[in-house]
Image (cartoon, rainbow, N blue to C red; front, top):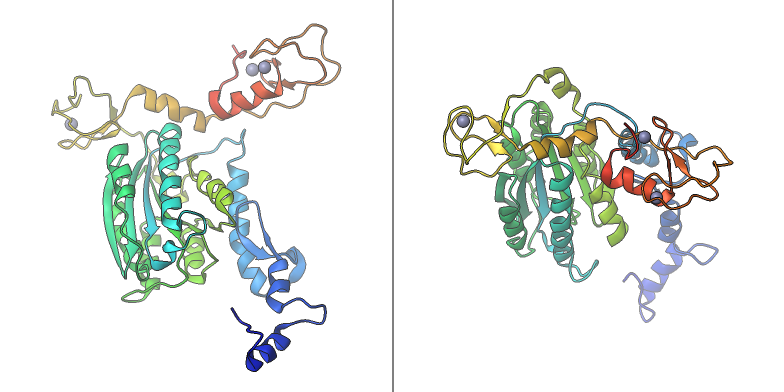
Length: 378
Ligand SMILES: [Zn+2]
Ligand SMILES: [Zn+2]
Ligand SMILES: [Zn+2]
């Protein structure tokens, strides 16, 4: 792109860019970049480099590492089980590009479909809203809902990529959408971006201040590169920011938003008993109004939170995570079998620290990823 062998001026430019060892300056700069486990891109020079461009970049990396550490199995802390989450999908012209194939927009829509399914399994008390921003405007494709069909329809109806997204419009709409959500609910915004520019009608810093005042947490996953204002927005609101390296990395970054996040400090102070009702025969148990809405949801008349017992049971394991099983001390007792699948255990096994039950490593992984309870604990 920069050079053309037939063009003298370009050849001179190439000479300036080329280093003594035959590599370009940008190649050396890229080689020094490192991606931490949270997906934050930073200078790879390490922690002792002092102030500089890398110092700003590392800031988000530290935050995302903190989130990873907090979500480690076995660490019990308060989590926002009732989640209100606004998805903002970039529909700017940059989403037309064919990397990852078939196009960024089709790729993101497909990833979101799978992610929504995983989200409602892991956090059944969630509600999601879909916004699309492109051509300088932001459109609400689906209001906050816990029902999958309108969300999937919204992903099918993403506008064709055109123009530039408007981060300010998107943030303002997300703030308006989450402003009246109950105090015990999380207020999360997940931005999925590919554009490197934004077109805003005013100062986006005012919108960021308003979002922070309303306790919004903004997370962003960028498909192309780190953009300063996006990262600033995430850091200000206590969210995470990451740049996807490829399709698999994007999937990993998006999956990190399936587990319920740590409860916002402000929300922790406000947490109290939350009245909930279990509707029978599509009737609200408090005011007996017909509840045509999907469960979980709110009664349209008395605003009682309507859930099913299974939703609470499925959310519960996030609050009391199963502790990690350490490797059992060798040698194992003779003729011992796995407490999960009854396979004879030969060399080594994982041991439950509570009941001392022994498990093969396959069962250990299954128990922690799917079951969330030890099968041999009393
Ligand atoms: Zn009611
Ligand atoms: Zn087993
Ligand atoms: Zn056990």
